[in-house]
Length: 413
Image (cartoon, rainbow, N blue to C red; front, side, top):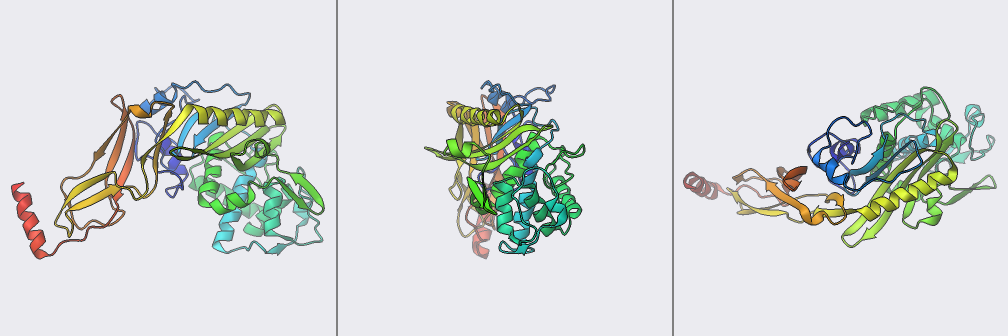
C-alpha cells in the first residue's frame, strides 16, 4: 500500500505531514509518500518506494497481522497481512471514541452532561467500568471508563447518548468507516464483543487511530495517556502496558477476545535532531497479553532505529523563489503550509533528489495558498513521491502600466 492512499484516508487536514500527490502506486489515506515495503497481498511488482523501504528486513512478530506507520511522514514502513479481516475486540472502541469526540466538538453533547445507564448497557457482558444504573455518570467519566478501563457498559452508554440508540450509533460507525474508505471494516456494536459480522483490518484501524490523533489532538492527549482510573470505588489500570515501560508511548488501546486474540494499538512520540517523530503500531492476534506488549515494543524500536525522517519543506519557509510577471512584486516564494517529510532507510537521506516543477511564466495575481507547482522526489533516478507547492505570500496584480510593461517584456522574452 502506498503513502498516498494512507494520507487520503486520514484526510487532507493531517497534523504532522503533507502526503505526496502521486506516486508510482496507490496507497493509504491522507497523502503519504511511500508504500509498504512488502505488501502482504503480493503479486504486483514493488514500486520504487516499496523497494526502497524493503531494503530493511522487517521484524518477525508473533501476531496474525501487524502494521507500523510513521505519522510524521504519513508512510507505512512495514506491514504483515494488514488488509486481512480480523475480529477487533475492544479496538472497536476507537471508533466509538472518535464519534463521541466529534459530537462534543459539534455541541450535540457536553463533557459534563450527566446520563443514566440503560438496562441494555447494564446487561452488556465483558469488561466493565461498573456503572451504577441508579447514579448518573458524566460523559467525561464515561470516556475515561471506556478508554482507560475498556468498559463495555461505558461504550454502550456513550453510544446511546451520542446516537440516541445503539442501532443508530452503529449506523453512524459504519457510515464514518465508509466515508474514510475502510473497505475491510463493518461494525455490529460499539464495544467489539464477538459477532460474525463485526470485523476490521490492521490497516483500517490505523486510519481510525490516526484520525483521533490528528482530528482531536487535545482529546487524544487528555484521555489516552491516563494510566489508571477510579470509578465507583474501583481502580483499574490502563491495559496499554507500554504506557508504564516506554516514556515515548502516550496512548492508544488494547483488545482481547478468544476470536481476536490479544491486540494492541500503540502511539509513540520521540525527539530527533530534525524534529519529533510519531509512530503508530497495530498488532493483532498475538497469543498472550504479554506478547502484544512485547511485539509492539519490538515494532516501535525497529522502526525508530531503522528509518530517518527527512524534512523537505517546513511550513511557511520557501523551497524556491520564482520570478513573477504583471505583479506588484517581481518574485514569489513557493513552499508548503504543512511539513513535507519523507521516511527513508537510515543513512539513505543523502541519496534523495528533489526537483521543483512549476508553470513558467508565473503571472499575477497569485493568492496565498494557491497551488502553483510540485516538488518531485526521486532516488537513483526512480520517482518516489510528489508533493504540492503553494504560494506563501500573495502577489497582487500590478497597475495598468506595470502589466503593460511586463506584457511587452514577455513578448520579446
